[in-house]
Length: 69
Image (cartoon, rainbow, N blue to C red; front, side, top):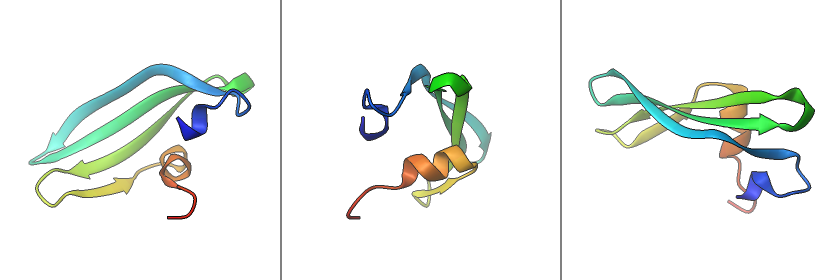
């Protein structure tokens, strides 16, 4: 919700999905519309055994930032 405020130009697209890529590992993606740039996708790698989450691309890195954290 932080990144999809009306003033940002970012709005939800197809939303969230997860694809298994290995034992206990998933690529989790968020499809969104980035204003005039069109459809984009943020991708994270999630290991459900270790609870480790890593951003895979620049969009996921940006969405992973939170203020005062």
